Length: 112
Image (tube, rainbow, N blue to C red; front, side, top):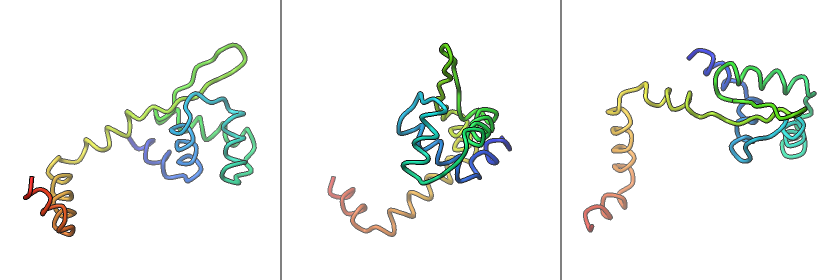
């Protein structure tokens, strides 16, 4: 689980994950182009490749080869493990607090 936290601690890796969420199954070339054009990140292919390797080792990205191309996909299952780690009571109490700060939500529930 430590690898997951290290992987998502880096803003460039989070941006790569965002891009894979937006459009899955991209090659290294496509990811580099999107990082440059959309986010202004002028990273070398080698640097992006190293970020992808870190994401793969954390289990957040899967890749498959087809001929000369390697396609990358996001795998959100390690992130789901993080959200299930903390007790459900903590999630419920935070949603109850947000309801208490938003009086309209309780009024709507009472009218239903």
